[in-house]
Length: 576
Image (cartoon, rainbow, N blue to C red):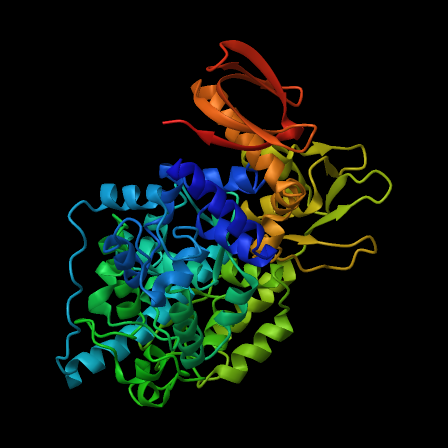
């Protein structure tokens, strides 16, 4: 029983492992935490199934993959790869691959593996280094624009988890990216480094992403560069914590049919972030990172355009930044003005709507004047000051509050025209406003939802508390920080407990498993039975049934039916 023996050997090995080791194995082999395994024998049997092995092979780095490809049946794999392959339950503790693993390897790569290409050693050029620094600056700004767009409205995802076509077009139209393909690339990059998170079927900015938006450009870049290195697939990493030459990435996982596409994607990401030049060479500032060291931004700092902290405020309600505006200033300015163009000199336009949105978010006329005056090279133009004052005066004519007793939302205004308009406005049907005898509007929808509906319909609404004081509302919905536990032991806890409980009498469990398989196959077996006088006797039976703690079978020698208690059976062997 070669395969049965392999299952028992693996089951014994699994029983000796810690919970951490088992949980890591199950995660690497993509085992479902809801698996119904009863004991380690069930686990061993499932792990040695061809389908399970096929799922585990694509993640193997080249050294481990080649050790299996070159392995001969019955011979151990080389020592350097033995422990890792054993931890993945692909070879026994003696280093010999399990028979089903050898079969799966031969089926996956019948002609073996091709050699990896030698690393390229072509030198960098000043032009490619300059282009890489420009890519680093430009794409840091693009990711910031994507996050700001996502704060305004989450990015919808389709069933596969990728960005929807409508959202790609939205990012292009907003100037955050130039093409839909670029949207996919940078959204994926932002998600993999933790700036975006997924809730339901949408991408949302994470709390880390919101903090990132207020960092200086160079710190934005350096944090993301380190996170990109750490997010690289394990097969691309070297022993020092850096990465192997990019020329080897496409062949780093020989069993993975998508290896070339995955390598191309990651190389494009690193090129976009200026860690590689367009030809794939590591840039000077990325060299320490590629070898497992800390990021050195000094070489990149010299090539980035200097940031400015002042703008020209003009009479036509625009602001012109004479260079890249410091990110924390850009983020705040864009809460009160719409950006019209982005380049090293960006332009922004103010309007009653943008100023109203800023006041809705918590600004006041005084805070707006103070901020704009502090960053202006030209003072505060009279037309802009007038828009701020007029908008501030009109803002809040519609007050939205929750009635404490009934929890109904009440909408109040002293302007009868506004009241009638809101009452019949078809764009507000979703919040179902009804007029009361007190000339107020009530809704069963929450006050926050009513407030944003009125704001979107361009009513001068303000949210107020029970005392009538204005309260600022945060519209942006962030990705939840309460992510599922990353600890595999927590993920597989119930399964591990069940397997441990099922291993209390492993010899009896294994014997019952062997007999069950013999019964299913109607196999002929030699059963060793311990007799009352202490002697042992072997019965050759055609196994026909198992249940109630007894084995039933036809005795081939005496041609009679026998029923043997399992408690008296010391061993069983298949008869060829």
